[in-house]
Image 1 (cartoon, rainbow, N blue to C red):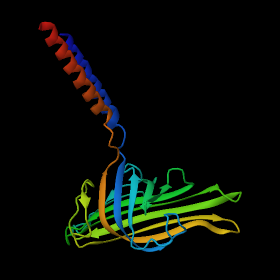
Image 2 (tube, rainbow, N blue to C red; image 1 turned 180 degrees about the horizontal axis):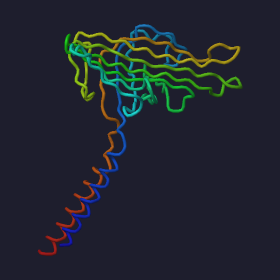
Image 3 (cartoon, helix red, strand yellow; image 1 turned 180 degrees about the vertical axis):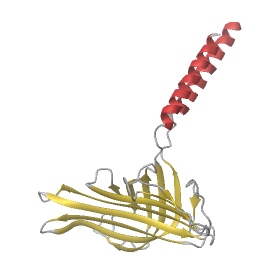
Image 4 (cartoon, one colour; image 1 turned 90 degrees about the vertical axis):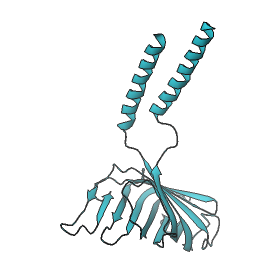
Amino acid sequence: MRLKRFLAAGAAIVALSGAAGSAQAALMVATFQGVVTQSTSDMTFGSANLVGMTYTATFTFDPSLGATSIYNPCCSGYFDYIRAGYDGASPILSALIEINGQQDLQDYKTDATTYGNTERVSSPGAPMGSLYMSGVGGRYVPSPVGGTAYDYHSATASFTSPTLIPFDMGEAWNPASAGAYGTASFLRQVQNAGRGYDQAYDIRGTITSARVFEAGAAPEPSAWALMILGFAAAGAMMRRRAALA
């Protein structure tokens, strides 16, 4: 009886934690990889010439932010798209660019001005699909030479695939193997009055792979509750068997 009451209480905890977790929108991560084709850098990534190097750009976004619309023309059904961020808060929260073992984080959460969007397109009439993500932000930051400097940064990545892409945004896409094309660009400028740009990079590249998945590898509260409940139940059963023996 005690074990049954314990299991019932544990089930209630799991239900409550699951309800609390579902009330919060899950963050998403989009990772693009490719090769740099053009670059202007001031050693931000450890080299003045980044052409030919592999880059990784990781966008973190909240799909619940911004306005989402689905478009389907009357009668033709040519394409549908899901778009967020045009008429509301930017869904793009940050973009982490990594090249040559060096990283630069473009954080849009604390910017004075933000603009970002995600767009998902499929074309049943002419099988193809595309994914477009962008984030733009800027703010005033302390200048290394005194006063303030304006930090402007932007990151965009988009590709078109000849394969029809579902809207669940939960699978990997390989534009290169699918015969598709994609482009990415990353820009950062920190400008001081009278000094020009103290830090700047302007990078363009091709996209060879893309992946979108839910952020956070840590177990959800309900998963933690289930694990704890399982360990406790197993321990109770072992103690009961030992007592009977």
